[in-house]
Length: 90
Image (cartoon, rainbow, N blue to C red; front, side, top):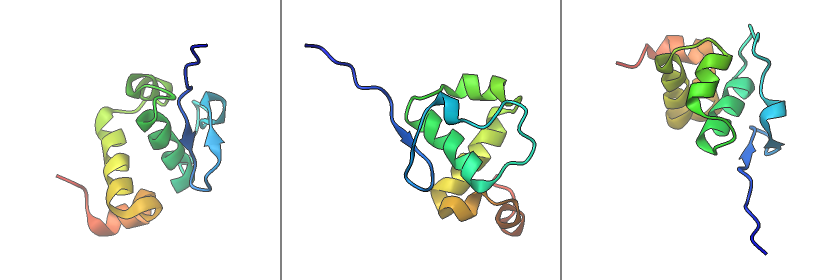
């Protein structure tokens, strides 16, 4: 029997997330956990980068800033105050 494994992504608490768990398209307040959910979903194939950019009306540069902050400093790197202290990536 050929069973295809579905993409699996997790939030900061380790909970499995699906497309239904993504922040709503009209999200205005972006918490570190919401950003992490979106990053994890893209990394793990739950949703494509192109779909995220369209869904949240954001640029690829904005997403890459989130991704870099998460990569270098974890959830703390997704907080606006942390980003402001470090300065924008070049």
